Length: 283
Length: 310
Image (cartoon, rainbow over all chains, first blue to last red):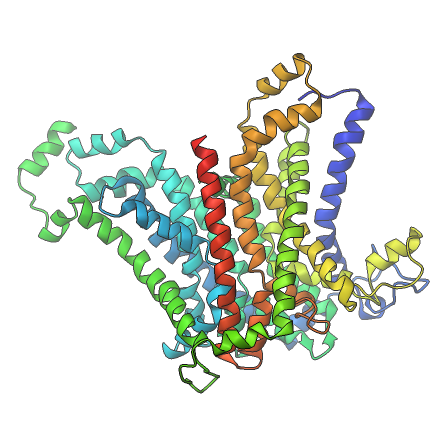
């Protein structure tokens, strides 16, 4: 890149970048400060003299205590984790197999099937949630984790398939042919030669699928009703707001803790996440 | 190695018939695709058909209802709130997409250099996109709270305002506030994807043009932008569809209020279908989204194909 004098570099690159980072991260800082703020300080109007926006001198764990003792927050975390992990595994299983078939096998209608999966990739959850709620009820899955474990794959599988197709296409055909010549059967070549090579792709799809299912909201909101079955996002929304009263301290504490698992997974696999994200865009 | 493997097979470890069938690519493909086909058929294709039938009936919660033709859609045609949500959805999608693209591209270009801590900055920048939307939106709702707002405090102390602003309670401001949050959430996705696109453009092209005397703007419009266009179009496709069908952000920020001023298709469908239990009417609102989505997908896919062919 062509850059000029030092002041130009600050003016055109560093200062804008710092502003971007500040704006993008500030809400999280705000979330953290709020969750440790005592109520007396929390509910002090912004035009009060002693309004202290960016710091608190009397940090408290009161909001976290409320979360764990007065609500089912622990349960919600466990539910969300179970649902996210199980639906991710199901989607990976289906997506890897389907991606392999679409990328490497010759069969009738392969092209149109690929297009169909790409189109389901673009179907938003909000298009189908009402009829799906009826179907879930008819299948007697309502208010169970299975209502989500079985429906989340509808947006995770197309994504995994699409991403895995890209990875499989990049693996040279010769590798498979060598294995065949050495006597491996068609499916053994897939299982022992090609899939192990595609592990980075599987990891990327898995991480993104996990964050997507942790993030999902409308299905969880519509399909689950009893407090102890809820996921974090739905539980926080429905149990920490009573009518017009928002329990802001606990809400922020819940939002903070509810973000932690995703943030941890993400921080360990940033590179995989980014390569998956950009891979899905390149198609 | 080769010899022993061939010998193994020749020695007649006879695979079961079922497994031998998998040697045929068509049978193998069928086996590999069937789990996906079952799940997608059961929870996408079937609900879609069911949704159409529902929208053509007068079903409510606990009452399967009868076929009523297009009555639900006729009702929507005369429904002011429905038209408000249609307009809102287009406005919301259009404005946020322009800003997300502009700011995302800017951020991508800022990141497309060598500087210390680049990996860290990139990792942190994606956070708004990673953290569950509902949870981060609550932080924004709290920041927009009229009485306790840190934004009001900042604007007041900088001298921009003299009295409080009711960000989410004022119908004319609520949509703009929601748009800000959507842009905040979407910029990282644009930035990181476009950054990946920028990195595939050889810096030599830019340098050669600079030596030939091209100014920075000319270099951007004549080199970077055209080469980035295919990636841009795909990113836009995903973003436009997600935004058009958005639900969680509005649900948390305003729930469609004040006075139904901020409804989108999805939140209005939720309010009618689940909130008041008029399943058929709600399904009709959801389904009304379909033709628009279809057109968006077709236009953008055609465009992407054209760009790729060229």
